[in-house]
Length: 79
Image (cartoon, rainbow, N blue to C red; front, top):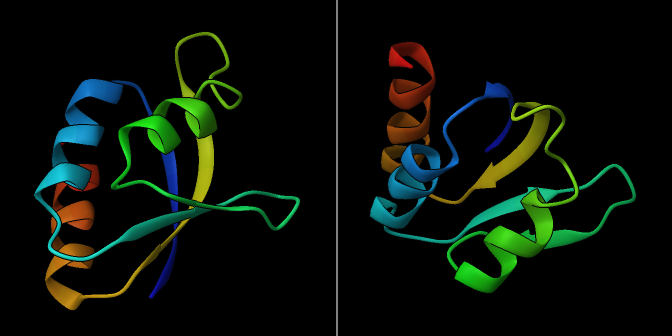
């Protein structure tokens, strides 16, 4: 499932949710590059370019499991 996630302010909490996901979660950049966010190296490599003033304004994620999608939506609604 593709989703837009906006205004990520706490990367540690966000990555904690990603780490709890059962299947891969991918970040799709504006250039069409795809990063597997289950990889710590990919997490930091991809997000280091996106942070503006401590906030990530908007990213596109692809999940491959409805449960994982629910975890990310729950995180976004409660943070």
